[in-house]
Length: 296
Image (cartoon, rainbow, N blue to C red; front, side):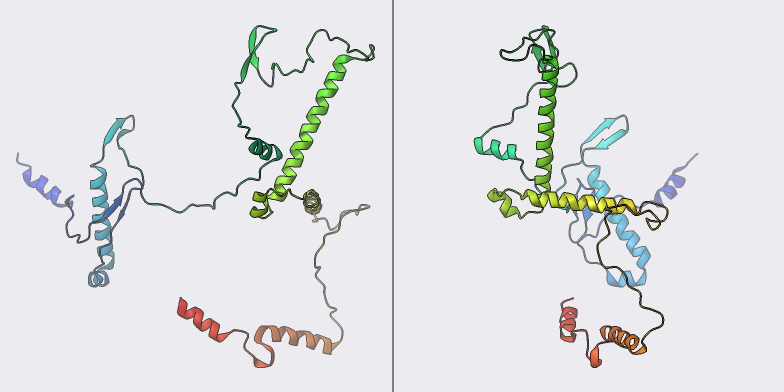
């Protein structure tokens, strides 16, 4: 049975993979799977058959892009045959702005001035007392500061009736609280420094802690005012507390429905003057508007 005619008819339904007629060569960025066609558009064909012309042009450019992809090096995997795309050459803009540099802490500035380089320490260290490796910090670590010693010698001049274990625990608790205060202070300074001029930060100017405390107080006041409106009545029918904060700002004032007619007329005329202009004068600078239109 001769099926060559059927195959030839089926082949005629598809276009050839070779595309001709490009005067300007198409540029490719295979790393982004993009093709840039700079050839001029046939305006007569575009006006006559717009949809067919655009579909044909898109099909030809897509075929050229696929031809370039099939010439790349391929690898085989569980998902099938895949092409090794090169590094993109087109520089795309960032989606978000560059992050602002974080202000340096006191220790970072001190280490930079003294030339101290941070070195990564190993997590596990050898404990000579137990003869085993233990974590440097945390659970079952060696940084217990002697609180796990089974016997403690009473220092000279100390009260022999004092609990040395409790003294060590209190001393460790004080150090932890001191470090927490320093961390909080660094966070407040960083919050103020983020709003300072970058030139002042590079000069080494220290943030004003009064501003940090004022910012913190204002933030807490705003959070308290927001929490007051988190009720079913938005805080309208809540009982007032002694020393409670009141929202600051311009409150809406309502004029009485019955009052002086001349005063009401003057208010309406002032609104009208702001909308259409006083004494018929133009509120728009015509010359400036014309210049802006020409620039566009």
